[in-house]
Length: 150
Image 1: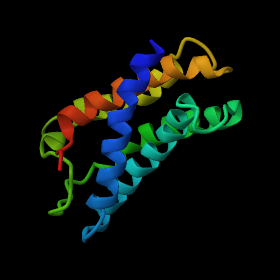
Image 2 (image 1 turned 90 degrees about the horizontal axis):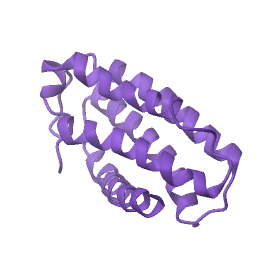
Image 3 (image 1 turned 60 degrees about the vertical axis):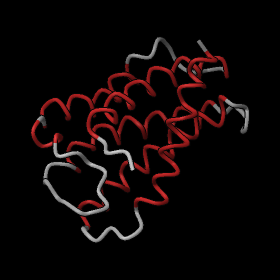
Image 4 (image 1 turned 120 degrees about the vertical axis):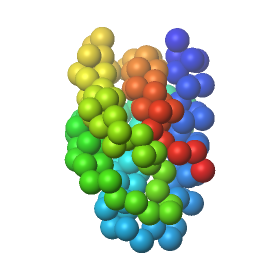
């Protein structure tokens, strides 16, 4: 399970982090920029967990808890960032978001639900991989449906 979670997290993190650097360049619409920054915040918190799971940084239960709390908070905030159908040539949001806004909202809030329903607290390094798998799958399913790949 741990290996699966790390394999899942690697492409998500690398792809998302690389696209952040490129996608934010030239964004003119401030609402689109706010959406992108909100997603960037989530990626940074997810990366905290990935770096620990890969043993690139030391395990820190307090940092894990803080990252999970921030991910949950940002997940709940995502629908508000997309309430207005703001456009920009650099946007990675598919128009399908506004056609299926209730479903999009449910998928965005699923991050918080997934975190709330983790099987237990993350108190050791071995606890991170299963959490990454659950959270990563939740994020990826929303991205697959509602995000344009650049």
